[in-house]
Length: 560
Image: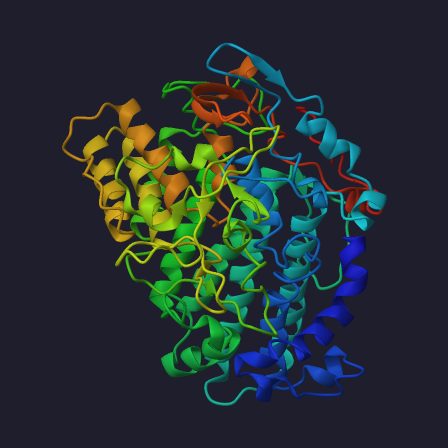
């Protein structure tokens, strides 16, 4: 990857040495000459490697180049996911955030059809060029940039680790570092393969190739590295050296709440959740207009099979359990890898809707069941934001919530208060178990998992298990709960895609029964929406122009 690899070596070393000075790790960082960092001079001790490996993830992966809107991977790339899933809206001109989530057309309750004069696919392709990237107007650029920077940083650590002398049980410490890199490489490939039509397999530090492969091959490579991480963890023999090493790789600021240092077995459960996600996120499981047998006529992926659902069931059964340590992030007042007020979708949505960057969507709000305490604890209707698209909303997200005890809080702009789920979570894993069971005919068992997630987040709503719901009604509860429970976790677009909602109505997709408020304040409650979004993004021009395909695999999605 030309546009990253030519910069990564110096950037990684330099950024790592300057990394997170406020996180309690500065004694790890004073290695070599910070004014002229090189791998050989600065990463030649155990402390130097730890610093390097930590920075490669949290700086190169999550805080690299995302200052155009918010300040991290979790505000801009994840913001596009939330926008396209109609979880939030926006009116900022930065990076096409105000256009990328606008559907092709809507049909209001009275039959009036409103058509978008600049459909999303045309906008994306008009701005997928290097000049637009430089001007902050190419949405396709950022996730690719972050994840290949993360991947290459891990390649560099892996190329270095066996050259370093370690104290204590050297083998266990080295294998901890290797598992760390394999885990994050699996994460990076999952992010690329789940969003882009094609990608590159790059497993040597600084290496470049034009051998593009389709997104499913990138997901296969993600699975390979996640499984390799689990195998490597199994070879660790010293628990104390493992805990010590991983405790230094994870910034201290993240080791609160459900963050911390997972045991080997807990980390393996995290891996299983991510393996299950890789299946679910990248295959179709259409549920359109209440039809569990819906099909999508034109897409870039295939449909889930019973075998796929059984694989998800097996993995998620061995996935993250309630109160397991998971990979989280926390903001700090300074020296952060994401800021408390601009580093996440949550932070950019928390504020009165007339002042927030992202506006909570009416379609998100309608996913709450009547009486859900998460709704009353996190949102108010004190102000109304009006927008000519579908972004008009009566709701604002309250900073820190309204104080209800035991109820999940969606947003908090105080430094360190918001728990960012970087990878899997208990709720995600439980809801995968719910959906797999529903799809395999175990309706009551699936509904019980939905109830459990609602209880876990303090929703306070009546149980749905034992109420005799049909599969279609049960799936409605599942889709609503995934939207509500997994807000600001980077998953919402994948859900809308696999359920078929982002596809053109002419191809079997679309979304029905939606609430849309007009600028005149008219509340429509049965609106039909045809989003017609690009399901897997084209490779950004910053890559495809500088590094043309030599494999015959297209870098522009040919299905749209």
